[in-house]
Length: 527
Image (cartoon, rainbow, N blue to C red):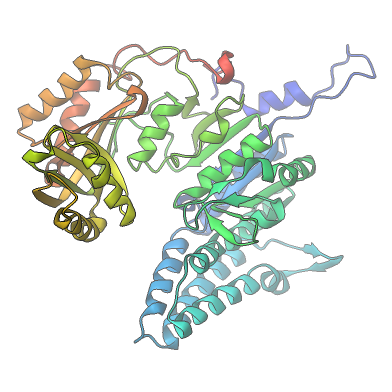
């Protein structure tokens, strides 16, 4: 149950929407609370999961709350689409490649749609039922997917523009399914695409950003409709000035939710998950991991950068300086905040959680002649960037530069750095190694990187285990400290570090996280 400090949605609704008999007749009415909810693909795996989400949404709506639900594709669909596009590029592939994947996609979406039996759908004054509704919502989108895949197979070309357009169809398929399920659960709902919502995007395909100012008008129009019904919005993408779909990157539906919550000045943003919130470590590796009740924005983003699937690292950026309350909640208990996210934590308490990123390679560039050679480190990192290799953590000394990259990028990195070492103008680079089979292990918490005692505990624990540390890197704003370790040692390192930092406490190590500062310096009533 919600704490007395932070009323649940039903309490907020009664407080905000029930008329006050002592108020004058001409007193302005107070709008019921507006909440943006993000529902990820893990909660949309099939009919039962969809029904659970729909019941939770409808239950909140019938109490008077205004709700906009941002959805990802059904579980596994984005991966299917990406795999199908790659397979269609294979010159040996025939038409059966497209037919097979379309058969799977059609069966998955038709089965889910049939399970919700959504009842009538009204379009352009015509009411459609049953099979007609399926044809209306699902089949045209599936036909578009088939045409795109066929075009990729016939031309042997997959541009970034076409890839973004193809992958966005996962969300276009899921939004009408979720809206139909909410209607069946007893609340009016309508699916809305990013195009209709006027969500403007900018930047490169695949990793674009939202144009907040350009999206304002469309979001304002949506805000008016939320008084009448639930709106279910496609996440993951926006549309640029040329009308092209631009993806926000994997996990980008979280970012969409943050953008929409900021644009609507929502009272709350809730990220619904199949877990209660952020944990002190991955419970699959550390059975004793515990729920973290409060995190700062910076801590949550740092955990996201390590690959924590709770939220996308950019999700919170649009909400900085806003008054929107942000929380992560279990879909099994959506009225109770699992982890509350505050822009500023009032109490600095050290380690909040451990995180790890698997599938990492360690790059090391060495040379005695690198001493006092200006620009060498910049050229090394710039060389990797030009090759399309993303660098996660960096450490350097007078004679070496080390960094971590995704393991799949190891061949690109080797090739690029070999060419760099062969250039006459790159003074000092004598040896290059790229070693896969590593993991990036992080200790996350406000002030951790600036606290020598926390670093000593981390490194002392790893040393006692005999775990070789490849590099040590400082996180942004003193919020994290990371090191690269062999992947084979990761799980025992996580268990030992969890015991070191959390073993003796009933919650987070050090002072409990029961106070915090809300956005803009105002105290959060739920803190």
